[in-house]
Length: 158
Image (cartoon, rainbow, N blue to C red; front, side):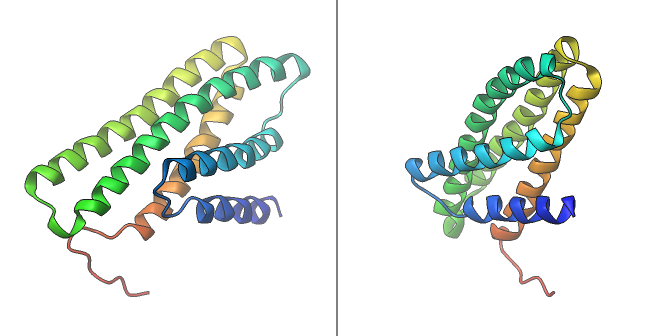
C-alpha cells in the first residue's frame, strides 16, 4: 500500500514538473515538489524527538542546494530545447558538459549531506535519507528521459 501511495504522489510531482520554462513556474514547481517531498520524507524517516530538530534543519539546508541544482537542470533543458533543431557540435559539447556537471553536483550534495548527517545524527538515518533522495532523483531522471527528445530522435515502440 505504501508503494502505491508513494508512486501516486511521485507521479503527481513529476507531472507537475514537466515542461515549465518561466522562472516563476520553476519556483512554483520547486516549492510544491519540496513540500510534497518533505511530507514523504517525514513519513519515511524514523526520527527521535532529539534527531528531528537537527534533521529538519539539515534537510532545509539540503533543499536549498537541491533546488539550485534543479534550476540549473531546467535551464540546461531549456537550452537544449532552444537549440534542438540546429544543434552544433559546440552546442552538444556545452550541453553535455553542463549535464555532467549537474549530475556531479547532485552526487557531491548527497555525499556532503551524508557526511554531516552521519556525524550529527547517525549513519543509518543519513543513509536512509540519501537513499530516499536517490530514489526521487532516479524517478525524475526517468521521467525526463521519457519526455525529452533524443538528439536525432527515433520513435520508441511500446
